[in-house]
Length: 488
Image (tube, helix red, strand yellow):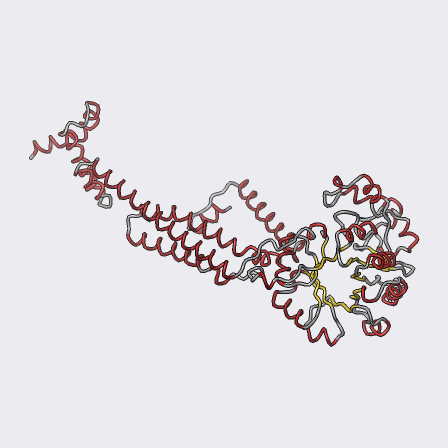
């Protein structure tokens, strides 16, 4: 396809077999469909690209300079072989311009981890999202227990309301992925999870799927005891989670989902949840309350709850609404906004942080806490993956550019020196007529033919050709000039 586009760009006509046309069309359609599907599935993940560039910018610059330096060998060779001075000048100017842009690129590189070590804050506190779902079935008591073993400061869960008003933990809209509802209630397996009463929910197994699917390839590392325990997990209620958090002295952050249309608890869902919180025995300061529905009324009844918003607003607006905490996705807050929230005394939690490098970038940015599916991994990050002061980076930057420039100059000198030697050695192997023939490559075909014939006679007179060569050229060369000489 690339070659075809190149031909079209050069104004050449394409003559493809019908099979080739079908193949090119199918490949094009498949590529477009794949890109569209990827964008729909991972639309929210594209923001990871600029963040990763921030995290690796200084090292990408060193790699880019190394690649540009290696390219000097090809460019220098082309310059040395070029016959026109204009071509040589253009090649050198284009290459040096690109190289200069690479050398100056650090002027636009910003990374949170380019900072003085004295300004580094303590590591972000870790909240276990759905507990520790890589070590145990998500949103189960076993998962929360595993998360507390990893010294998390809080537990985050997804809460729905059952048909009889019991808040329970479930991430998906249906029960099919994380329970055995298809075996116990096959005719209801596609129903919304909120359309089950608590008795039916308690009858479901919420752990065997984890052992069967092994979503994080961690089952083999589990002990036999843990595997048995995981296989016996049931759907967990919000009250069970709150009581466990109270005993473990950790905070609770839950995302509450409103029941669907026609649900008997659709209008009382907030009151049902608040009543569960108040009756669980947990201290109100340990609960991060996120629903915006009837927030004012909730604040009047339970003033100790940490009012938490999932909507990004200016700090002044959040303060006016009584918000003390803010929960956002990792890509929704820049380093500048993190500093602004901190200055306004708003505690910020960024979610979906599972990789050490991302944890390190947010640590350098001053994020107070993160929510993670992998607390057991982040707990093992005692220090940012890399941290460099601006002065240290300036030294690395300048040293890299100087070494690169010295190597480029050496390559150009080496290539031109060898090209000059090659040309001089080539000239010594040719007689004057051959040199004249090389210089006349741009003359008319008639002049070139005459030059070739003179070269043949020169070789004959010097005794270079053998009898076979003479027999080859006799008909068209020697006899011709003999006849011409006789005719004259």
